[in-house]
Each structure stands twice: as structure tokens, then as C-alpha cells.
Image 1 (cartoon, rainbow, N blue to C red):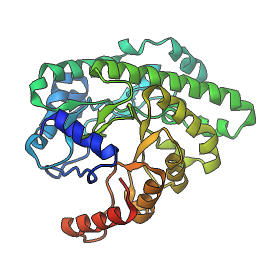
Image 2 (cartoon, helix red, strand yellow; image 1 turned 180 degrees about the vertical axis):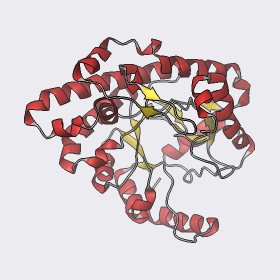
Image 3 (cartoon, rainbow, N blue to C red; image 1 turned 90 degrees about the horizontal axis):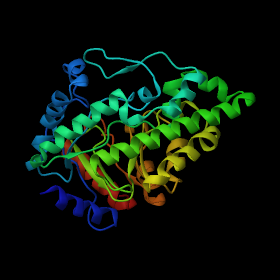
Image 4 (cartoon, rainbow, N blue to C red; image 1 turned 30 degrees about the vertical axis):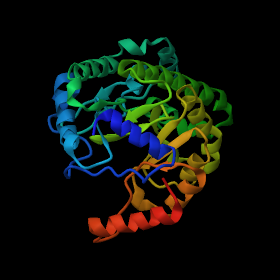
Length: 328
């Protein structure tokens, strides 16, 4: 099935027509290709070939997923645009360098994200991809952390002390405004490179198969909020998710770890179209599906299997839960 045909099928799903989408893996594989990663990181052509090798088997595979690739540059992608250093260790995803002080973070407002090192690597990756557009594989966004995650990566653990200090409220708001600006400018340029409409996207979320989002133009990862209270999430994190999503018509959100209140609060945000969990095994599956169904959110996520559960029993159990809850 062509990419355009898959997009049409996915649009019907989002409209509530037809069954839920099932992305069937072509083989067991690591979440990220980190073999020879140091060389891949700095070589867009090698990076593109590595990612395409993972996606090509899905071209003729019986799956609802759209074969897809992205420049696999890690969580540092946007923070480095503000001047954050980084380390590339063989066989691992990038590690952030020393955190920045407030003045260095403030200076990032003047940075042209188009000219930054990692954006240039991403742009070359996309150029190479579109020169091979006969492949039938879609390209999607490099890793985009959310506003609060970017702030944490830039400023480090000091952010938690400053959150607890009433005298630092103005600085925290300024910090998050700076990170919001970076997120929006970087995301807008990526979409320009991809030729995407502002309010829609294809996204693979690190997998060689992705989905089409007709009313969400960006993705963000907000892992850091699992370390703060529900009240602080509501006061500090949610407003900036809304502001970040506004230019793009909606957002797909990922986070790792266990924080049930965060999941509930994301379900309560109108701008959040879909949610992914990095650790679905930490949650009761029925609770997740019921909450998504009640709030109209799509669960675009792996769902935990039970001990010693084979693929057929897993599929039947989830099918039963989907039918009973009405989740998408």
C-alpha cells in the first residue's frame, strides 16, 4: 500500500471509522540503531542508510504502519541549539554536557536554529532522503523534547530548587519562555524541511513504522515532569504544552516512568491528540484504555503483555479490551 493510501486509511481511523491501527514489527530489533553510532551521528548519509535499512522491510509487510525514518540525533537535538555541549559514546545515544547558567540560556534567544550544527545534520539527512524518494518511505521529525524537558536539560537539577523558591518564579517563567521559543522555532524549521503542513505530520516515534496525525503537527517528550507533583505539573508544565501545541494544531506526547496524574492531566488537555508511554508495564492496561476512551485520546503506544503471554493471547486480550472500552 502506498504512503498516500496509508494516510487515507489513517485519516479514517482518526475520524472514528474502521478498526484501530496495528503496527506489526517486521523483526525483533533494538529501539535504536547504535552500532557504530559515533560515525552515524556525524554522517547523514550513513545515518540515512542505517534508518532506511530498518524501514525497508515494512514496505511489503502486512501492517497498518507507514514505513518511516528520521535523523536519530537523540534528546539533545534542540538543547544543543541553545549552546548545550554533548558527548557521543560508542554504542549509546548522546549524553548532554555541562549545564548552562541563566545568562548563557538567555543568549540562545539570538541563535539562528537553521545554522546550528545538529539542524544542519538533520537538513542534510532530509535532503538525502528526498533524493531517494522512490523508496516509498516517509521522513519525520528529529527528536523534539518538550519545553520542560528542554529546560531541565539546559539548566540541570537547579530547576527543581528554583521551582521551590518563590523568589525564582520570574526566572522559571523566563526559562520556560526561552525553551518554548526554541521548541517552536526548531519545529517550524523541521516542518519546512519536510514540506509538511503546520497542523499534520507523519511520526514514527523512533520506530521504522509510523502513523499519520491529521490534527497534530508536532511531537514532544516530557519525561522530567514525572519528578514533580501533580499541582506543579498543572501550574508549570501544562500551560507550556498548550502554548507549544498552538501553532501546530495539536501535539502527540510521550513520557517514560510512572506518573498516573500526569497521564490523567494529559488526557484532560484538548491540544493533546495522542499519548505514548515508555513504560506501559507500570500501569493497569484497562485503566489506560478507559481513560483514553473517556477523554477521546488515542493511545499510540506499546501496551504491556502479561507474563508468559504469547502473541495470539496478547492480541485477543487487547482486542477484547478495545471492544469493551471503545478506545482508539
